[in-house]
Image (cartoon, rainbow, N blue to C red):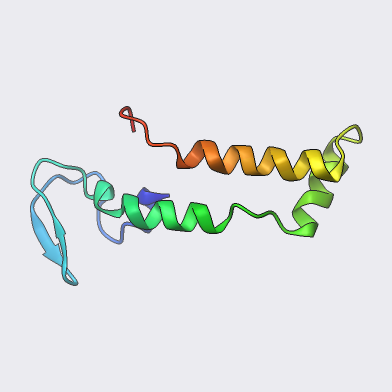
Length: 85
């Protein structure tokens, strides 16, 4: 998500300032967008009714509640901070 939000070369490590956002030297530019990415992911935490219905269509054995909980678990996992990211 942070890579997608980054409007400039996300893998560049050159220090620069673009539209009042500072990109540190030696750090990939996409890392400057982690906070915004986390906000965007958190905003998707609640699945819509249509999303739950589609999940149930994929697996006839999955209830709407199970689909809802599975979606939330996936979003919660995406929001966990990891040193390897």
